[in-house]
Image (cartoon, rainbow over all chains, first blue to last red):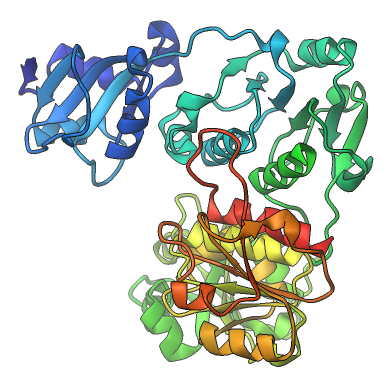
Length: 250
Length: 250
């Protein structure tokens, strides 16, 4: 067990940098914090590179932390590496997910340029609950290892395979496999109720403001909209994802 | 048109206080900010008591602000009364909604102790989109005139009747009217797909952690759950609300 007492320690400096996407991608690691998230990560123990514990915290007795690298730190250091106002005293450095083979997936969610990390996290949590096989994030979508996204995912980021990729190429692959592919669009398309629930589908959701890119919409089997019965202009993208995934799951 | 140049002005002090629930309830007014929200509020012009405009901002030409009380302020004052980091230079003081008669409603959402203002705002937006007649907020639910809630509602707070009330009493009223009443529960009850879409229903959603109060669950026609197919422990309450309202709408 290591012990660090200075916020100027090199390791501490490096951990803090993990709040930037650049550093996460350079190192293939990200930082998580809080009792719930670390407990979820412990279920896939091999992803944890460092378990970081504040000296004033006692780990829950049911946690099995054998063979983990544990670093004890001061409250001050915890505050420095945390991005929450009242850190819970436990954090971990985790390694990126292994590469997954999205070719075998049957229920797929494609995410085109979703910007808000809270929305993306909630979408990941919802897709996990709805029994999706995996998620493909297109270019322009916020990094899913962003700490706000991880928090909103409530740990689903550890459960569900997530890869980055070219959405147009993947759409063509699923089209060739004759998996029904559905875009989402406020204006055109058919009501989502006209899409039959199925064992296989690929759903594409889009940017909070501008929706799904037209090139993608032009390459789907069908484009779906969710009717608006009141005066709201639109639904939040995570809400729309929940309605559509649960409808398609049947 | 008034003009205020000092952050110490009495009016400015009073506007700032509207970020507390206590002051909102004492005055029957609340503060909104941003171009989109103020534009939405202008659709029901009579609720706007004061339109507050920063001196560096030109109002959109399509806004009809005749007969409105307009106060010009400095950028510094706008910053002081705003709770966002980059205020858009337009705010308004609005009056609470009129009392609505919830007895006539046929599609009702009861909200039991939802804590997070972002969740409540998204729930209001979703209920508006799903064509709900009105929302009743129980004791222990966050104040809907909280500025984060108003922001997440994307203006639906101006469209949809919202009242506060005793949920158990309202539940009994709707039961007597033979409107199907549905609680939501992770453990007990039936899958939501067993509830038939209908012209009339009353849905109850609950606290992010503890769900709907047992007293309420014991007084419904049926309690519903949304199946979890993956490893997520639960759905976000706003997501669950979206899935249920769109299912019940049919």
